[in-house]
Amino acid sequence: MRYAGMTCIVVAGVLVPLIALSKIGGGEITYKPKGTNNVVFSHKHHVNLKGRKCMNCHYRPFQMLYDSCEMNMATLSRGNFCGTCHDGKKAFDVKTYANCTRCHKN
Image 1 (cartoon, rainbow, N blue to C red):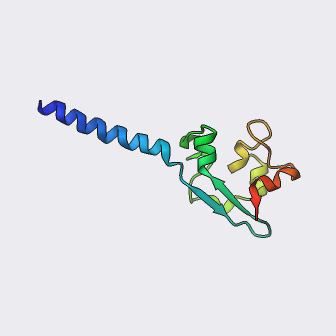
Image 2: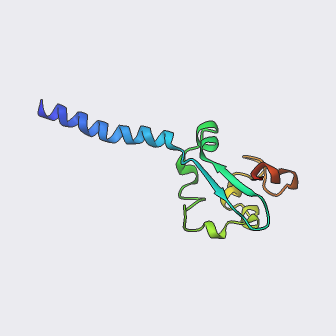
Image 3: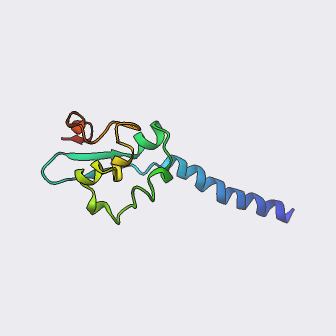
């Protein structure tokens, strides 16, 4: 009986955090590039609505706080950061001028 109780505790300790992680999504992140409108990244849109997994972006192409200072339209256009998926094949591309307002909002 003692082992059954421990098994329940271990299973709950593993499954509950995994279930919670699958619903976290990270909220919204606002990027404030110089000379243009802000970009609000929605984890909810990408994770919950589009079915992406956290590991699709973390730790590549996004390494969290470490390399965000290098993120600009030139690096995106070369297929880094958002440009990894926003290439015109997987998702709308970052190179087309008409797509600017899809990310850059007031």
